[in-house]
Picture 1 (cartoon, one colour):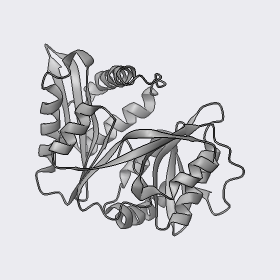
Picture 2: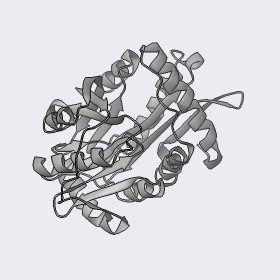
Picture 3: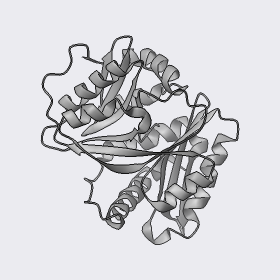
Picture 4: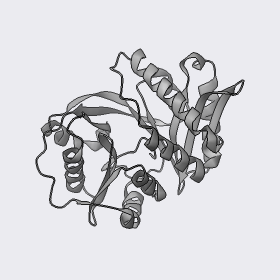
Length: 278
C-alpha cells in the first residue's frame, strides 16, 4: 500500500460491504463516514506498513487488506475485494500477505468475520478457532449513565494499555488516540475498564470485571445518538455479561459472524473487540 491509496481502499470497502449485505438479504447499512475511515487506514498504514496491501488490475484498486501487530498479537483489520473480483483468488492472495506479516512469531491472532461462508471457511482453514457470536441493535432505552463512568481523553491511554494487557494480552496504545482523532468518545471507570463509542455503537470495550463492563456498556448505549439504531457486535458465548444489558435496553439479538482466535490472546473477557483494531 501507498499512502495515497486511502480513498481507493475506502471506496472498495464501501462497495464490498454493500454487496455483502445484499447477498445476505440484509438491509443496507449506512455508508461509513469518510473521515473516520481515512483515519483508520492512515493509522494502520503508518503503524503497520508491512501489513498493508492492495490488489490492482491495470492500475485499478480491486482489493485491500490491512493487518496489525500489537505486542505480539496479530489482527486482520480489513479484507475487502470488489464483487466482480471475488472467488478469483484475490482475497486469498491478500490474506496470505496479511498472514505473512505475522511471520509465524506472534503469540496470538484475532480475526472478526462476517457471516459470509467464504470468509468463515478461509479463516478456519488458516488455523483459527471460531467463536460464533450475536449482534444486538435497536433504539436503546437507557436512563442516566452509571455514576462510576466518566469521559476519557488521551491522558487515559496508559490506563487503557494496562487493561488491554490484562484482558487480551496486548495494548492498543496509539489506536486509542486514533479513535479520538476520528471523534470517537472514550468512557472510563477508573481502575476497572474503558469503552469507546463511535458513530452509533460500541467500537471497543475492555474491563477487569463484569460489573464494570456492564456499566460501561450501559454508558455507551445511553450516549449513542437517539436518532439512529445503536449496535453492539461480537457478543460471543464468553461475553454472557453483555446479553442482559442489551436486552434490558430493548435491543434485539440476532446471529452475527464469528470471532476467530488462535494462540494466546489472554482471557478475552470481559471484552468486545474493535472492528478496526481488534
